[in-house]
Image 1 (cartoon, rainbow, N blue to C red):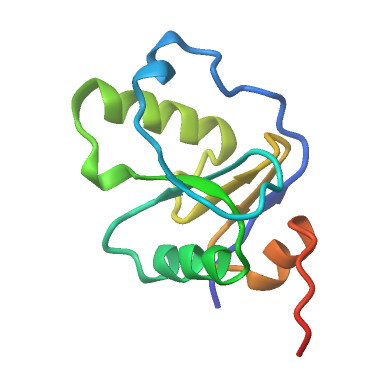
Image 2: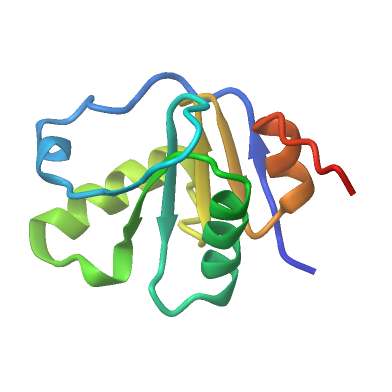
Length: 119
């Protein structure tokens, strides 16, 4: 079983540091469901599953592979990630600056993103 954390008491912290302006997130087009950021590792199977889930459900989101960053960019990314997830675990999905889901949790993502499967 994958560890998960759902935190709905996050304040709006995005953009609170000047360093964040230099962080290069990748965008995936889809249906806009608000602010969605994924902090992931390029070699993480659960991170890949999370990305696949979002894409299969046509959700627009931004992501960054933390392990592919370095120097000041990595420091800024890790500081931002720690605000949302002090355990610094992956994947970390931030929804609307207020909800955080860690680990691959399709049921939690479905509820948070109002996804209804027709199956």
